[in-house]
Image (cartoon, rainbow, N blue to C red; front, side):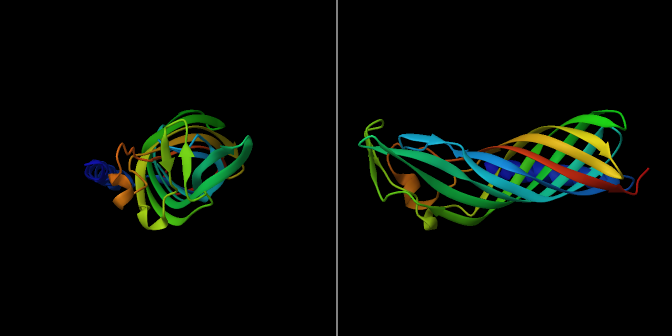
Length: 223
């Protein structure tokens, strides 16, 4: 159901976009930043945000002074960090989940030619490129009174999707715009599939990512 709703919503945005782009000012840019990512509902003793890089390109279609449609092609290093404590010794293990992400966002901005504040929101699609973990094979969780097991690659979904919300600032710099931005991505799909999802009291693991980025956009055409 989530995939159907997402597909309908993205189709609606695409149809709306195609009717508005004839007179749009098109911007092309680059961005880079840092992710703080985590998976929900992990059964290990303690999980925390994992740091990773974010980089990619932007296409921004400025419909008018206050409204734009933005799409991106990103490489996003995600996952989660897990604190493993045994006999008072602490080790930190990680899930590595790296995605190609394609966000499609509606963008509202306010300001003048020198500086503008903006918010944007929409959907993203994610395609898993790399997965690994360095967790021990099994671990008894006193907190949850269960054994926890790392997820095997064959049980990881290669596709993800979710919602994105951003707040940013653009500043005129030479022929283009320099920007800084904070964004929250919330995954809608379980990263797991197969037998692992059939265990008793199973709870889905979804991606949660907070990222901070900066970049530069050059605009062409339009008014």
